[in-house]
Amino acid sequence: MNHSDIIVVGAGIIGLAHARAAARRGLSVTILEADTVPRGASVRNFGHACITGQTGEFAELAAAGRHQWMEAAKEADFWAAPTGAFVVATSQAQMAILEQARAEKGAAAIDLLTPERLGAAVTGDPHARLRGAVGGAHLTADLRVDPRTAAPRLAQSLSSASAIDLRTGVRVGRVADGRVETSVGTFTADHVIVCTGHQLPALFPELAAEAELVECALSMTLAATPEHIRTDAAILTRTSLLRYDAFASMPAAEAVRDEVARSAPELIAVGANVMFGPRPDGTIIIGDSHEYGRSVDPFIPESTTDVLLTEAACVLDQPTGFAIRQRWQGVYASSPTRPLLVETVDERTTVATVATGIGMTIAFGLAERTLTALRPSLRPAA
Image (cartoon, rainbow, N blue to C red; front, side, top):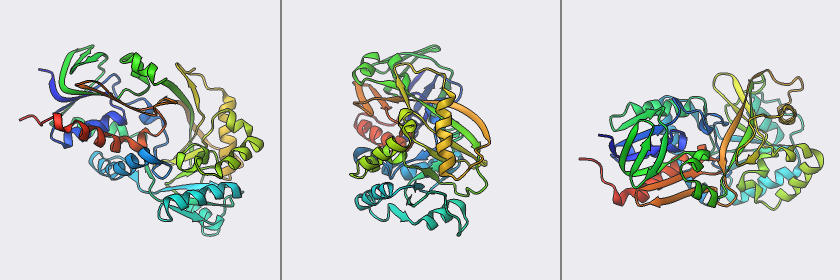
């Protein structure tokens, strides 16, 4: 009675992308989710698909899923925009990173900007300049989605499909050999894909321990978008250049690390990636810090938020500060050894966890790869 071709455990963006990929192949799908609506990493982030900032395998997955973000947005009626992203450089060392990354990625991917072009792009004023900016770049392939609506509306859209059965408020206790034991009974499938993120240890503690999986907590803020900021694109800063591999791996990155350590050691201390995600309702997401632990403390020191907002105010030339609407803690899975944790637990169970902060970026590309790998053993129900 509760059998389907595929069971997906977890209705975050990774799980939903896998469910969509399976349904597009003509497979029947059951999604099991503990919450009534997505409440985890998928709604607590910037809504930024940082495609340009990836290298190697992650770059391939990000590029492979880019068009599917836009298709899914049309299907589920959530806001998504191929705006790219802007990087604000405040030193020549930061510009050197962008120049070196451009040499690797190509001029079509990274458009270097003068201070005048950057100011005009971000503010809409051809005469405006951001205070302190010596230049910047436009990362042309990056995407924006609204994190508050993307996963919930995609879940709702998928649940209306005849081949997908979304069950919320269902606690999963055990997964093995195509059987999923839950708080509302047992479900079976030809294959089970587990996408529970940082909650993976509850189901597969040995796998999580082997991967040294921990939680990463983020300090996030929602504010009214400053009146002079007129772009829908994400805006990245000097600390972003030290976190995304396509920039952090450049030879010039060491000079920027030293520069930030000397001029703003407090940013290093909180693991800052100061960046901005404008939303279509006139608000802007400001973040973030990074704290790691097996079980992170839910309490965020106000000093951490002060560090982020002070840097944010400098970058956006907002001397009076921000009109704060909300604060919250983001949490995602992190592994120092296996940032992409895709594991065949048994012949009928696959774990798919993005154990780094780019789940929104690679979700659809990862789902396509997972389902393609399973395809020879699966056939659509007659």
